[in-house]
Length: 178
Ligand SMILES: [Mg+2]
Image (cartoon, rainbow, N blue to C red):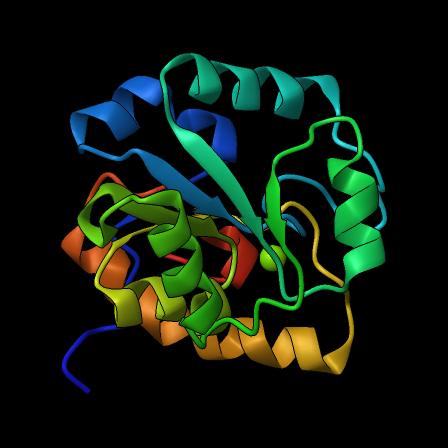
């Protein structure tokens, strides 16, 4: 594997990823995950904070594309009042959908970034594409064994991240103590 699975940056919440931050990095298109990145799984609609954040990106000329591994009904509902580009069943960490979308938008990959809450879907997809891979602490996880296992597998990667970035966010979500 010629890349690491470490995110390029880790944030406590999506709202810390400002238009200024993205613009400074030359980003014109932000692929973003929805579940646990912008809203909890069980919240069908975007709240005002999400709407404000998305509006600020639009204002700055940054396109937003929802890329979710979740199904159409969830994504359609979330996107109902927003009307943004949306790719359900995106099959992250596979990158076919992302590549095609960037191409259709006419945005070169170096001007794209990907935001999400999971290493083995979101960050991995971003790394495969070689684009800026931004990670947020999950809003609220499901408590199934599947999810607990995924988070446990993320732990060593984030421990390494913490070492390399002394000013990292609180990692207690992953039960990483220092
Ligand atoms: Mg997610």
